[in-house]
Image (cartoon, rainbow, N blue to C red; front, side, top):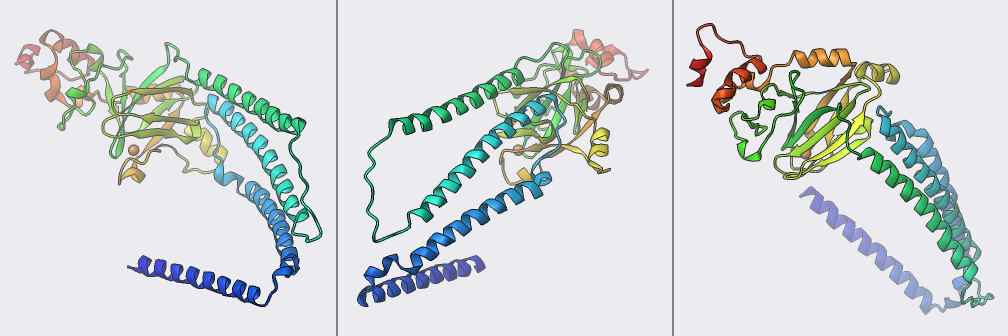
Length: 357
Ligand SMILES: [Cu+2]
């Protein structure tokens, strides 16, 4: 209701301003002031344009410099250095173009303000001028695009064999991670039809023996200095994995798995020391508006040295151990292997045969 009243107020003020403008110009015409078009107001307007240009440029440079830390984040990945340098090259090229165009544009506005004594000059075309403003931007843009493409090809090249594979799954409104487990280091197969609302949130296929030691995590743990391959999928709508400090951004698309490989260069602790913020934490945020709870879709990220990372992985319980009911979905001949791999303590009273029931 309040916003409606404000809207009506704004519309009324605009109507009043328009009417005042109309009335004053009609009065001007009635008084026969037409010939005064080139009078003081033109000079004032031209001067105001120059003031705007100079003030705007000063404000632009001051803001860019003073708030630099607010709109840039420290980098903690290998490819991030490359994409950031590409970003800044593009930025400088566009800033130079922006400044030149702004100065020329406003200088022309001032220079060619209305003058009753001046006659417009007819200037059909100039091939040199046209070639210049076509070829120079074409070369600059081609260089920018091709260096960018080369970087993108390297970033999206297949991950090496010993990359650490981790799966990230998006759903309204949370992220879940699945690790391949310490015994086989391979993610088990999944199928969307196996997803249920009781426990099998991954759609884990328990006839695949790689799935026995997979474990779930609500925190993304990453080893520093090692190649990581994030396998990304979504269960409902579009989401997007965004790890701003690692310059990683990849959509999570239902029905179309995506991935991103990268190497983190600083542990959480190193970043805390660098930023001087003892509470600093990396985060994974959803960067695709995915519904009402989108804002809450974030996950803490912990980057540690490889030793602590391996220790953390070993301390995690396998998904199968946490959901022992699903043992019945394991084929009979694999049950024993499954229990050993999942780290399930065998009850002295229950033999493997009993579990088979
Ligand atoms: Cu989302």
